[in-house]
Length: 367
Image 1 (spheres, one colour):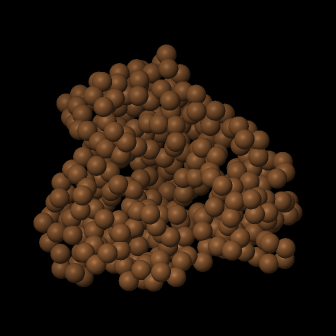
Image 2 (cartoon, helix red, strand yellow):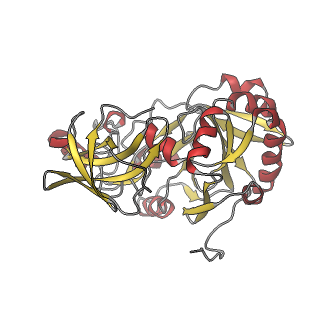
């Protein structure tokens, strides 16, 4: 059996004690930080997430803080999404690109004020890119990783659990908005967001010493709600079409290939690094597109390396994430497919470790 050697380079979190006591079975490493992947099994964890409520340690969503007079300008330089109308209590899902239009990250930007932003990042060392831009452009802004660790509460009973701990004010939070709510002698940003389609919240815990007190409070309040420790679930994620940076998209892809073109504003009055490149890609049209794909056959472990997609004997793409879905009785997957072969109903074949299997491009994701 393989194991991971721990060191200071592999960061524990303010909630790791609770995760371990809850019986975590496996971890991955995400932003140099532990992220649980399984507690009971992928299938039973998924069923519980859809029926009840879970508490997720997502401290791996490290924050990049922009603070200073040029914070807003720097934030807009990072993304082709127009941030000018964004209010101080909003969170935006933002593609972040380089000068070629390639995807560097797909974080959630949290606007504290025009002069203070948190970027809740996916798995990449975005901090160094942002620091480099700030220094190279001589911007009046500090860029750092603050002591902020997100904790997610996800599932259909999330609203009830959160109301018991933070009060009924949480019920009034609109999707991708946040409120600053009291907890003990401190306050946390509580956002209506999360990496599932089951509904829920993310709590931005500022100050690691508050981690376990919050963890214990949630579990004490949710005993009769069948609350459990959980984590982002591969089955539910793929069913929902929630992309994973580093798996489903990389620097080799652009927002238009990833289905994010609709949130890119490329007008002259929106300054974004990579805008010229993205304008060319938009005008020419993307050569490949992220698509949902159903794969025939019995359950199989998802790809460690992409599975090639074929039309006849011609390779036309790859499957990057896949999982057996008990609810939909098929292997659900996410693939990057050449535009000529991406239409709903297109029949393809996918090369798995167990041989080729029939696959069909779907109209929409399953959830």
